[in-house]
Length: 349
Image 1 (spheres, helix red, strand yellow):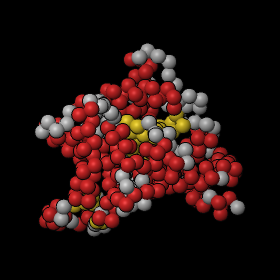
Image 2 (cartoon, one colour):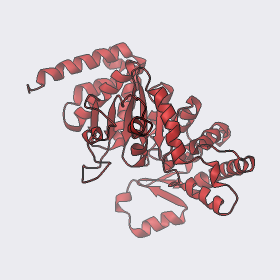
Image 3 (cartoon, one colour):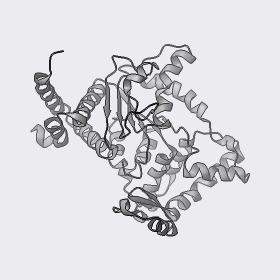
Image 4 (cartoon, helix red, strand yellow):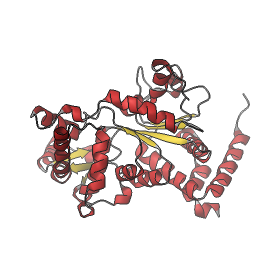
C-alpha cells in the first residue's frame, strides 16, 4: 500500500543507499522530520532554476506548506513570471553543447536569450512584462512610495489578467508565494534584467531609485521574519547553489546574535545542493562545518551536502515530500523501515 501511495519516497528509500544518493535520502528524511514536528523551512535559490521550471514542483510545495520563506536571485524572481506569461514562446536547444559562436549569434538575432538548453524570448517576456512594471515604478515615484523589490512582483503577478497566461499557473512558484504572502529577500536584485531596466529609468529620471528598498533594509526585515519563522521547532535552511542567494540570508543568525546582541535560535537544519566542488575560499563549495565557525550552524544541526545537479535532485525531493505530506502515516513507515535497514550496516566507531 505504501508503494502505491508514495512511489517516489519508496523509490528513494529502496534505491538511494550510498554516495550522493545517500545524502539525498538522508536530507529528504530529515527535511520531513523537521516539517512533521512542526518546523519551518527557508529556501535559498540561486542559478537559473526558474528557467529550468523548478516551479512545477516548488509551487505545489509552497501551497502544501513545505516552504515558509525564500531568498532568490533577481533573475529567478523575474524568470518565474516570464514562464507564466511567455511559456509558449520559449525555445529549447538540446544540442547546445555543440553550438558554435555563429549558432549563438543566430539565437541573438532571433531576439532570444539562451540559458543553457532553453531561451527566454525578448519581446514576449522582457518587453511584455516591462509594460506592466514600469508604470508601477512611475506611480510609486509620483506617490513617494517605497517597497521591497519582490513586493512589486507580488503585486504584478497577482494583477496580471489570466488571459495573459501562457504557462500553467499551478506551476508558477512566484504566484504561489505571492498568494501565500511568503517572506522573501532578493539580495543583489540589481543583477537581473529588470534590475538593469530599473537602473535605466532611474538614469532617465523617470523613476526614483529610492522607491526600491535597499539590501540593508532587506536584512532588517529578515531579522523580524526570522524571529517569527524560528518559533517552536525552528526553521531549516535549504540551499540550491551558492553565492548571494544563500550567503545573504544564512547570515541573519550571527547578525542577530553579535550585531543586535539579542538571543536567537540557530538554523535547525541545513542542506545544500550544489555541483560546485570544494575549493579554496569557495562559498559554493564550502562544507557545512565551515559555517559552524561563523556561528551560522552548530555541531548539532542536521547537515547535508548533495553534490549533484539541483534540476534533478530538488524536484525529486519535493515530490517525495508532497507524497509524505499527503500520506504522513505511510511516509513514517517507509522512513522507519529504511532507517532500520541502514542501521544494520553502520560500522561501529
